Image 1 (tube, rainbow, N blue to C red):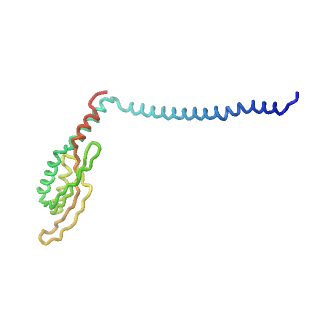
Image 2 (image 1 turned 90 degrees about the vertical axis):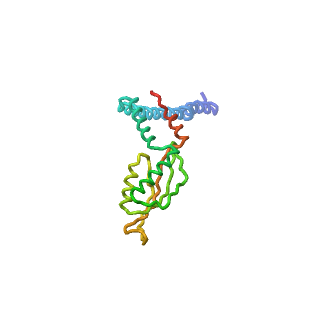
Image 3 (image 1 turned 135 degrees about the horizontal axis):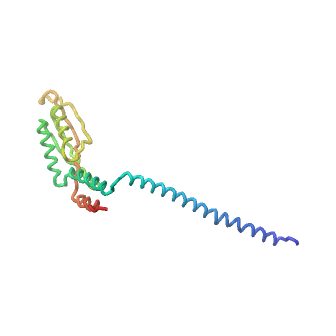
Length: 194
């Protein structure tokens, strides 16, 4: 039997079909299968982590109730928008109680956040350091959430003022619940049980 060019091409074509099938069909499919297996392994590991986490919490409903109560306590410390003036009045009275003289008070624009807003209040207070320290301690005891992100103290060298007087330039941030966020907060969390 004589092998001609046509027979050789036919044999090469027959050999090329399985090689081409392997390279263009089976090899890409094997890569896809391996990627899917890796994804399954990752998801199984994540499920095992979640299972371990849920084993640590004996009763999920009780944990949700506990966290809801904690959120309610924090929300109680956020005055609504209308009561920010009361907080400012309390701060003013605390300063006067410590014999501090507020020289200027200026509120900036409220900085909105997801469920609350922050009202920065720039204050300049003059008085003795001990009174200012007592003022800070009382400020810390306020039932509302407040923060002092900026504070600058300088010694006053004014002849009219007594020895040991200081000037404090502070920014007091009062956090409050806006009317929109009050509605949003109660509907977002929902109070239903699982």
